[in-house]
Length: 189
Image (cartoon, rainbow, N blue to C red; front, side, top):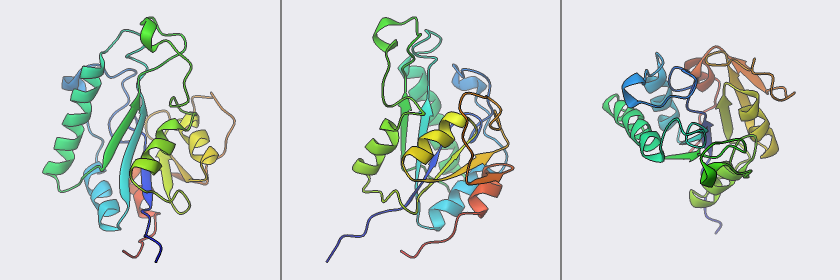
C-alpha cells in the first residue's frame, strides 16, 4: 500500500503573513496582518501542511543576522500558536548575489524564484506538490511556485505583484491571505 503524501500551502512571509517593511530586521517591528491567524488555522483544519518560504536578503546585505531572522520567525510562530494556528516549518534563504557579507553573497537555488526551499520542504515533509499551493506577494514567489507545479495565488498585500522582477501570471489573485485561504479546497485526511 502506497503511503499517503501530504499536500501543503507554501506561504511567503513578508507582505503575506506580516506587514512588508522592506528588510524587517527587528522583531519589535513585526506586525502580523489582520486575519492571518484564522486563515492559517483554516488551512490547518483543511489538513494542509503550512510551510513558510522566505527570501531574507537582509542577512547577505548586513542588515540582520540569521539569529534575528530566527527570532522574528519564532515570534510569528508564537503569535499564531496563541491564536490556535500553526506553521509546520519555516525555510528562509539568507543569500543575495550582491550582498556585502561575503559568506552570504552567493548565487543559490534556494533564493526565490529558485526552487530549493520548496524542494527541500517537499522532501523533508513528504509533500506531494501536485495539489499543493503557493501564496505570495512578489513575482519571484509566483515564478517559484510555477516552476514546481504549485497552484499559485498572488495576494494584493505587500508588493501585490508590482515588483516587476519577473513576467509571470498567477493562477489566482486574492485580496489577502484570508481570501486566498478561502479559495483553497478542503482535502480528505
